[in-house]
Length: 192
Image (cartoon, rainbow, N blue to C red; front, side, top):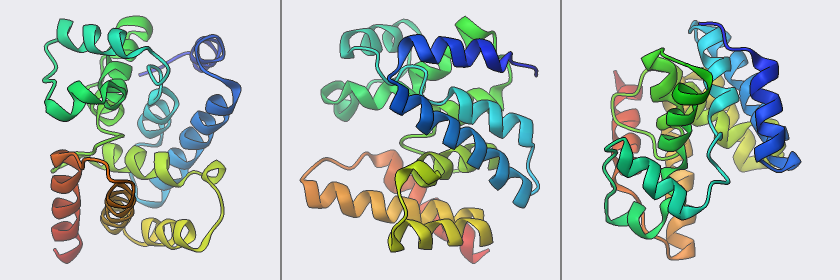
């Protein structure tokens, strides 16, 4: 699967703010590094990392329309918070605009925000890289999650979910059932 990286970056520079491009490049690099540590396909991880936020700045009505057109289930939470659909829609853009056909890459893109139980290694990698890439900051909590990720991919997923859920509770926001399912699955996977 060869994606012309320069074309993707040029597209991103036209469609997302420069600060988001820096985040995306951070996710791309961290995805590659985590894949190497955990003996996963580095090229797939890097490609999914590069394309994970293609639809991040699409307006809500466009996200909803594209999701409906591709028959993506729009639950109550996503209907009220359409930005949560940007992951699924980013996978659509990767397939339609950049001709990505690899299902593992497309799933990793689609699952990077809410996660999913039984995620592939590539999906887990992009999920944690999105939350932990260096541009996110350098505090004790982030560093602890990064350390956990280097030691155990599933522990990293579990800790990222835990912190995300705590922050959503503090902000009084709904918690998507997929994030809860991801947390519980990753927690079990760390015990195997």
